[in-house]
Length: 150
Image (cartoon, rainbow, N blue to C red; front, side, top):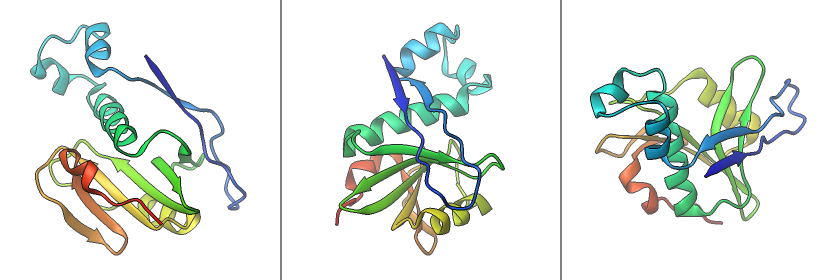
């Protein structure tokens, strides 16, 4: 019922968050507990973004497995929603509930600080497209098509 995502921390010269993130794995249960009865209720609720993040996180972990899965964040606000370690490489995922996600300063910082191979911005849209070098927007429905390998 609950997903506890541990933090990734290493000495990168920044104060990092060391407390785990906790998610309710079933968005239907979350919406019920929040008293949300319709999609209109959900999109107006402050939990809309976190609900999307939890749904996208679960779908990503179903696609790639939950082993060696972490989040990363600094006390100054830079963050990465999900980092997967696979074959000694680091792959990043940001979950954005937006029609057309864009890059942020935090994304560039995370790629450099953590040495990510690639960062995917998972969103509820339809099109996959590059945002910058090493950053791609990808619809949640295409999450299983991503290659996270050696």
